[in-house]
Amino acid sequence: NAGVTQTPKFRVLKTGQSMTLLCAQDMNHEYMYWYRQDPGMGLRLIHYSVGEGTTAKGEVPDGYNVSRLKKQNFLLGLESAAPSQTSVYFCASSPNLSGYTFGSGTRLTVV
Amino acid sequence: GQQLNQSPQSMFIQEGEDVSMNCTSSSIFNTWLWYKQDPGEGPVLLIALYKAGELTSNGRLTAQFGITRKDSFLNISASIPSDVGIYFCAGQGQAGTALIFGKGTTLSVSS
Image (cartoon, rainbow over all chains, first blue to last red; front, side, top):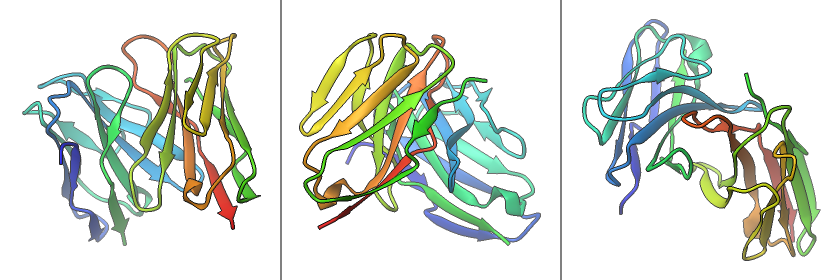
C-alpha cells in the first residue's frame, strides 16, 4: 500500500548509543517531516525537508540530525541517545505545505 | 513561536452524544486542519480548512475556520465507540512553514 513507512517500529537504546530512524514514502512528496510525540505535549517538529538535499530545523532539533539524500527517504539520527529522547517518533510527508500523511511511528526507549 | 491552545484536554462521553472541541491561537493561521490518532497509529487527516469562515463536513464531523483566523472548532455528532482516540488541531501560519500542532483532545466514548 502507498504511504509512509517507518523502521524500526520499536527500539530500546542505552544512554550514549547512536541510531538512525528511517522514513520512506512512495508518493513522490516533496516535503518530509520528523515529529516527536510525548504525553501531554502533542506533536513537536524536530526537523523537516522541503526537497531532496535540503533540511531545516524545527521546534526541538537539539540532539538530532537528519539527511535527505534521496527524495523518498528522510533519515533521523541520534548521535548519543539520552533518556530525554525517549518518545514516539513520527515521520510525515506532503505534496504541499499541508495535508500530511503520517507513518505509524517508532517507539524509542532510552535507558 | 506560534502556539495552539487546544481544549478540552480530555472528554468522557456517552455513545450518541455530540462532541465539540476547539483550538485558539494568538497568531493568524492561513490553514487549519484536524487529525485523529488511533492508539498505536499515526495521525490521520479528517478535515482541512483553507478560508476564514469556511465550514466543512466529513460525515458526522464538522469543522470551521474562525473568521478572525485565530481559531477553529471540530464537532462530532452522535458519537460512536470508534470515535475514541486523540484529536489534534494543526495550523499553518506563514507560507513555507511546517504545521504546528495542538496538544490534542483525548476522547473516550462509553457504550
